[in-house]
Every structure is written in C-alpha cells, then in structure tokens.
Length: 131
Image 1 (cartoon, rainbow, N blue to C red):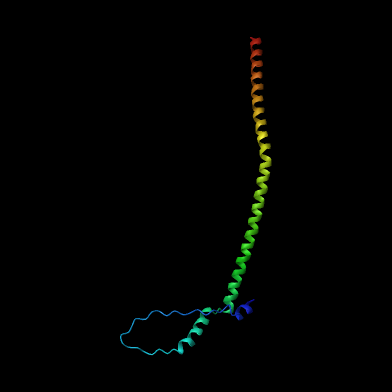
Image 2 (image 1 turned 90 degrees about the vertical axis):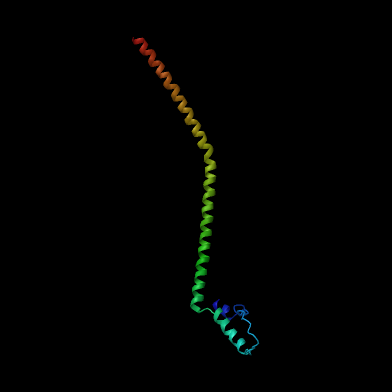
C-alpha cells in the first residue's frame, strides 16, 4: 500500500505558489530571472509534500488504531443497545406482574386491619364478661 501511494501521481499535486505582493518601486525595473523560479518551485513543493517513511508509518498506525477503536466502540454500543432493549422488554413483561403484586399486598394489608379490629372487639367482649 505504501509503495503504490508513493509512486502514484495522485499523491503529488502541483500547487501554485503565491508570492507576497511587493511594493512598487518608482521608475526602476529590475530584470527578474524567470528561468530560476520554475526550477526552485518543484523542489519546494516536493519538500512540503514529502513524508518520511517513519512519519507515514506512524500516521498509518494511528489511522489503523483509530479505525479499530471506532469499530470496537460501535460493537460495544450495539451490544449496549441490545441489552437495553432486552431490559426494556423484560420490564414491560414484569410491569403487570408488579402491579398485581402491589394490589395483592394492599388487599392483604386491608384484610389484616379487618382481622385486627375483629380480634380487638372479641377481646373487649371477653373483658366485659370478666367484670
């Protein structure tokens, strides 16, 4: 993969260099050597675009680690969503049962109170007989 990237023409692009505007000089025109500029531009561009093999390998390693991290996080998220949906399904199944149990507990409390009142009444009648 690295050999094809370095050898491909798509990896090296020609970007036009922009020179900063120079202030106008009054009445003096100096001849600028046109032949030297094109020779300097490719050297500057290749230096700016060139990566050492170690830098490229390090970059490739970081990209691979990032890809693996994203894959792992997506798998973990999918597993968590699956667990959450299973828990919601179980909760929806258990909700009616919990409601029924709550009603049964309320009924048992009411029945206990009724039995307590009956026992208290019987005890009061027994006390009245002993007097």
